[in-house]
Length: 401
Image 1 (cartoon, rainbow, N blue to C red):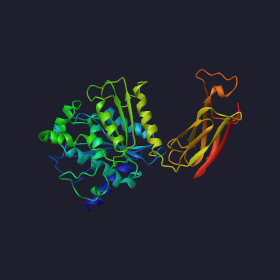
Image 2: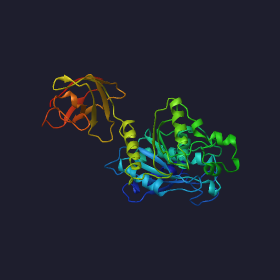
Image 3: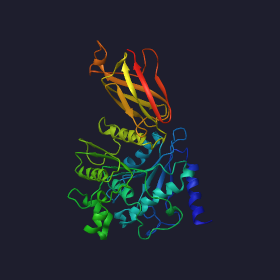
Image 4: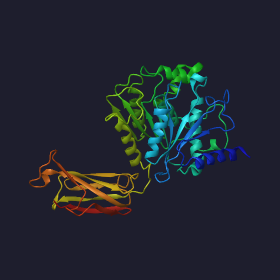
């Protein structure tokens, strides 16, 4: 059996045998041995745990997950397994990467080689895994966040010693990236010295540290990026996330930054916390509106919104598809007028409307916050549903109170 056939057979076995299993498949990224490996143990042979989304939920998207640990260990539960299960919950297949560590004698560029190989493995075997090769994201936490940011900025790098088989011929560029309370700079006073030491090892020079400071490596080719951070993090301060965000802005890369005030370093999803636990919901919404979860065609809309025949002074119109993975569009209404172009408009097909407007637009209407909202065109009419057509949709909308 050829090397390529062996790789594809292993991926197919993992994808089929574990598609509905409770525990993930474990797949080595180089079945015949990783380049530069010092042995055959797991610490020497990088692998992924494959967590396929359930068939009834799967939307064809996938994420490679990089747990943190300062390049000296792996927080593989709350920054790996738990994250994979969360992704499965929104229909996304997950591949938790166990990359080689500085504490085991492996240093840059080995880690870059491992994360590139993980992305390439998923993309090369997309058909077998039942995913879209153009919807593969990367997320990482702490030092794993640094690794994910290297994947998002250094995907064209060809580390010395890498193999050159069929898997290595596909792109290592992720389609979206989510560095999470990530180590970013290795040279500034807010850098995480332990991660720098473990990553670079004997090559721990300022020149090498600058090369792996990923805020300096952002280009217009860097994928759309989502960042989560806490202001109270003293281990990996918020300047890391902010510097990457600003680099994205400078290079025209779509980016979204959420910096929460409370919370120590290394919180993971923290789903039990009423404040920090909301960050993953923002990630889900961002992925949805990027078209990553369900890439549906959109259309332009424009027109007027009235309440009881009078133009709404200010408000909004939300267009929501029955597909929970599809993008949601929201048009701002001013003096009765609204407009969205094809890039920001609703998806084509049936959508539900929810409109909001000033309570002052309806005589005698008082509400606690001065606004009113409805999903009905008139009382008792049920959900307000429209059929959005391709192209430009001219709409005349009237709410009856």
